[in-house]
Every structure is written in C-alpha cells, then in structure tokens.
Length: 109
Image 1 (spheres, rainbow, N blue to C red):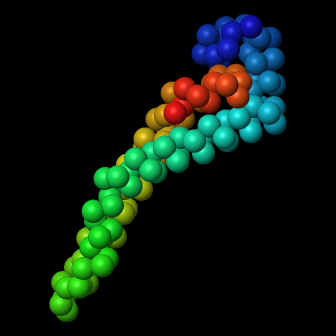
Image 2 (image 1 turned 60 degrees about the vertical axis):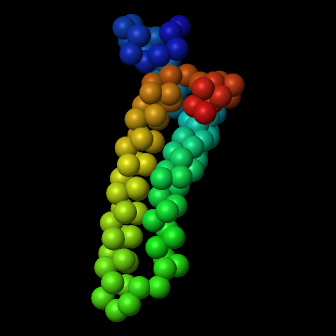
C-alpha cells in the first residue's frame, strides 16, 4: 500500500488508507507535528518581531503613544498572518495526506 493519498488509484486501497489515516494514532502524530511546526515558525517569527516589541518600553509623548500602539497592533497582526500562512504550507507539505510514524516528525524540524 502507498504511503501517500495522492498516489492511490484503487478505491479499496484508498478506503484502507483513509481508515488508517483517520485513526487516533495518526491524528495524534499529525497534532504533534503541527505543534512542532507552530513552535518552529513562532520562534523564528519572534526573531523578526522582537525589535518592534521594544517599542512597548520606549516612552513617547501624547499622540505618539497612540500611534505606537496602532503600529504595534498592525505589526503583530501581520506577523500572525505570516505565521499562519507558513504553518499551513508546511502542514500541507510535511503532514497532510501521508501515513506518518513518530520518527517522521524529525523532517518537520
């Protein structure tokens, strides 16, 4: 039996694959892989955003304070959008549509 869903043409093989793919063990492995991907991209994203978080500690007078918070909010929103897209792409590339073993999670990192 093939390990990837896209490579299976036979309906019986596809049904057996889907039964294994939807099992609790496979869901747990995919969930652990998703957590690893989120942690990797989240920590990498923090390297890009940490200078912006320093703006929280800079004292700015009056109106500049409001502007700083607005810009910081926009930066964090853009960071979350970037992280979401990266996590989604890596999930599709590494975890979606395959039967996984716990050792296969190494390639996620």
